[in-house]
Amino acid sequence: MMKYVWWVLILPAVVLSSCTSQKQLIYLQNLDTSTGKRPAMVTTSPEYRIRINDILYIRVLSLDPEINQMYNPLATSGQQNLYNTEQSYYIYGYSVNDSGKVSVPFLGEIAVANLTLEQAHDTLQKRVNQVLRNADVIVKLISFKYSVLGEVAKPGMYTNFNNQLTILEALSKAGDITEFGNRKRVLVLRPGENEPRIYRMDLTGTDFLASEGFFLQPNDIVYVEPIKNKSFRINIPTISVFLSSISALILVLSFVTK
Image (cartoon, rainbow, N blue to C red):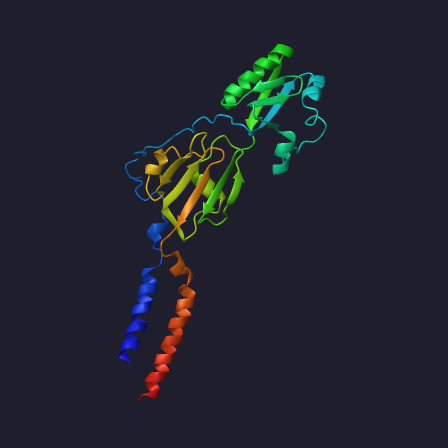
């Protein structure tokens, strides 16, 4: 009988030892705020270069309403919410074709692949200056998609409407890492023309602030690995019920054998 009693005492201790400690849930644990010294970190996002199949937002603005109507017929026809859904990006945006060019009405095909957004703007502006006077061009990337997978509250694909996006912001939009997520093993997979680049980061420290994966780029994939004892922790309620049943049974047997 004593053997079973010892098991009842030991198993709860094992269950408690498998629980996630508070320290495992804290980000930036070695950040020293007392000295005011800033950790090494990347301060600006690397310039993204336009790729084939990217979707661009392009508008030609002029003081002449007729020119605006000619170059931006949809935007000047009262349809102000052209880009309010993901499907509308592909309908009203300018897609970079397999030749690396965008086809803009009255301007023709313009090569933009492998250019930064600033370079693409300058290229389009030069073309506009050849046919119009006192007209400005707006160029933005509207196909900045990224995926967050693994142990987060809301895994899925997201769209960013800002030029910069950090991994912390991406995780925040995905509802943060769950209690089953391993904050020491976060992976950023960045597709490339030749081969993907992989960045492994420990979010409990500060070194990841200086990683090239700190700022995300379009089509990046963030994956949060689960903790090793996830399966055991998920089954803790079942184990607790089992232990309660065993305890009750031992209690009954102890009275019966007296």
